[in-house]
Length: 127
Image (cartoon, rainbow, N blue to C red; front, side, top):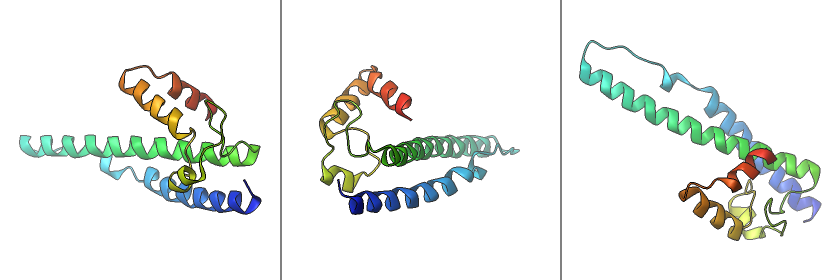
């Protein structure tokens, strides 16, 4: 991968990191609101649960972006964390924070659906 390509991905990732940090800092939607009406309580709880799930998703994405930035710094960006093959430029253009090549990502997704998170353990350890 050329220095120009790396700089392009680094800029994209830094912008995404800034965007996600702003989102993750805003936790107003997860505050517990009391209401005299039981139906309002249920509605607030459902909205809070959705906000928590969104915050969790954005936090995980932020972790992946930060991990990709570290891989740029250490020179391993663009290499699959599992099979150590090159991640296709097409995949990196679509998902610059991708830690796995498409084949390993599909395997990780299948393992996750089956409840076997060995690939995710690899990703957590890399982060």
